[in-house]
Image (cartoon, rainbow over all chains, first blue to last red; front, side, top):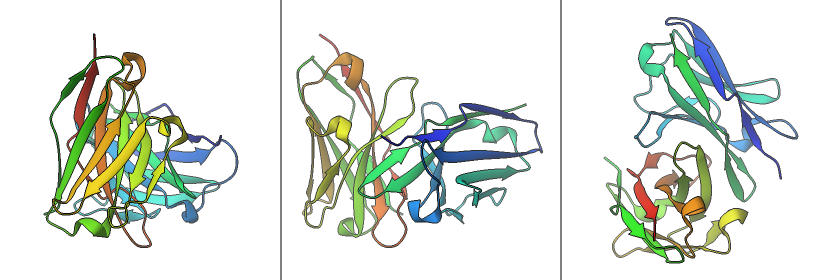
Length: 109
Length: 121
């Protein structure tokens, strides 16, 4: 079984830039996996940030961007704000199955 | 504005079946696939399966294949998730529905608010 991998945790200073990644336990992530990214704060439903590798959802600040870096999908936050402190999940479509990464807990301090 | 509104919290006994509804408003129901996602307390999100409301076709994650049933009522634009043989260790969680627009982009565009399921004797 192929697993979707994310960093368990990351820390960034306010105003800093952070890159969260989404990989596979075997193989490379490409745009054909339709990587998407979601933000979740405790007690809330997830919020859609990025889909189709790099397309921002409506209302998402432009400090959030997506790309493919090497063999992984990436979510880049440029100029992190304190309100960005959340859990971040990537999703990959793999044929007839869909898989979430384990999530990254981002701390902004 | 597209909204997904889920049914309320449930308390079930071990071995029981839970059925959760998810009603879409503000758009055409059959223009979306409806996915279901589980989140156990303090854990990450886990994909359970998806339903095409237009033809009833389903795809289930291996973990839930034996106990999960997804269906839809297009007359009320409502999707349903039924999970059987509940155990507290595995099934006590928040369940979300999410709408994935048909077409080239595959993602969860809209989310329901979540339904808490508790399993206790």
